[in-house]
Image 1 (cartoon, rainbow, N blue to C red):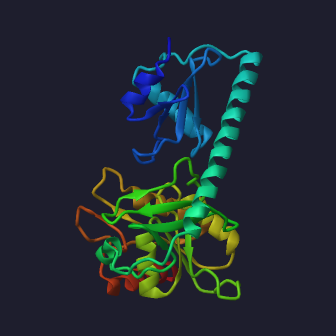
Image 2 (cartoon, rainbow, N blue to C red):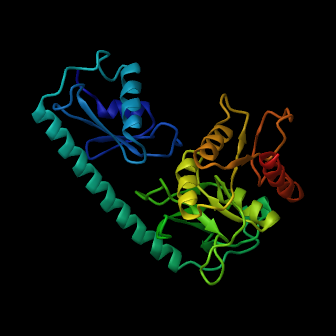
Image 3 (tube, helix red, strand yellow):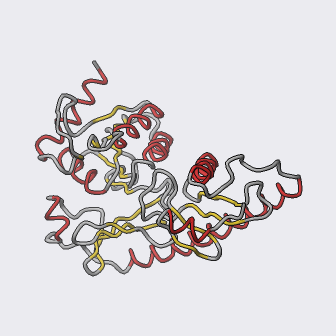
Length: 308
């Protein structure tokens, strides 16, 4: 069965680049292009799948998706020969090298963008709409810039927030394992001793810090929560870690709460939610959507429930 990368890209809302169908990795937004699918006579089912921002399990899930949608043979193809396995490994290594080179170039662009940006305007429409103070970010033109760093605090990416709240990441830039930190360390570089709150977006975590003064970390997506939580546990082995969940009860599955619970379980943390479990509202809410006076209370409720 011939693999039609053009048809795959069209069907999943992706694009074709250098013979690859670039589509969203499962669980990522529709704007994501983290999965590459390439026709290959050396693969048993006619194609190679690489998830740059996922795992081998994600790649296998993509192949199952392609089979279910009729783009691959349902039987999964024949067994690979040793020569074919070597060819596939070599192709995957080449793709990883290309991806790393692209991420390095994106990091350099992010560093330049950040270095040339100025102080954010407190009257920026997004800050006003979210009732946020402009700390830990910069502004370039009309765009707010949120730095995204790794475990060593190296800048790899910058999230750009437009006045209407639309968010963009850097082209070809890394996202997995990156985060926006604020007030984790004192001026002398030593860590604070209090708790750390980990959540999804900049606005959510900025709202929590404004209301509580607690150090915060934005993982930038629900999918990234567990990875970032594990990094924080490695960085702060004895500090209390709190996962601030987005309450996505308007979805078929409450992704925000599910991923926050998973992350908390992985690092021995506790989950805080922006509204009580008994609340029946059927809409998405995060900590930036509730009154600031309620934010600290919801965080404290989670801590008390843990100690009870």
